[in-house]
Image (cartoon, rainbow, N blue to C red; front, side):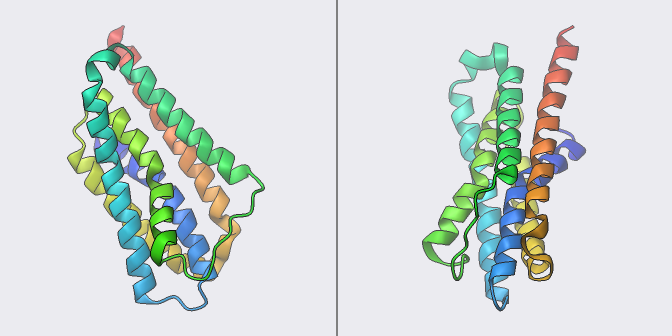
Amino acid sequence: MDTITLLGLALALAMDAFAVALGTGAVLSRLTGRHLFRLGFHFGLFQAMMPVIGWLAGLTIIQWVSAWDHWIAFGLLALIGGRMIHEACSNEEKSADRDPTRGLRLVLLSIATSIDALAVGFSLSVIGVSIWIPALVIGLVAGSLTIAGMLMGGRIGNRWGSRVEILGGCILIGIGFKILAEHLLMAS
């Protein structure tokens, strides 16, 4: 996987975390270093772990899906990207309680913002990409954007959150098309 694609993938996956961090930064009355560390560390850790879990799951069934791997990768990325866009455009209120950087809420937010990375890890395994460097980059980018999002959240609040998620969804769909096009061009 080339560097530009990897960074695009990492940025796209971090958009959910960034949007949640924007909201969290806006909700907290006083943003501290502990808030930044807790959310940034957990979001980065979960974003790094989930692709590895998905990749390992994909390795176990590779012999059954190798003929359709490019279609599977495209479908998963398009589905995830479409879901991100749909969620960003929905009118459902996204509530945040007192301190979302603590306890069960922190774990649930970490899982929710990294589910997409699980499917991406699966997709990378079916197209034969090693997961270790992508997982590290995905985790570092997510952690960094989470901290940046929290810092910005105090200034701009939730106003831009849905637009960032839409951008992330479009990037994932674009990467899916790129994988599909590369495979189909190589086959012909």
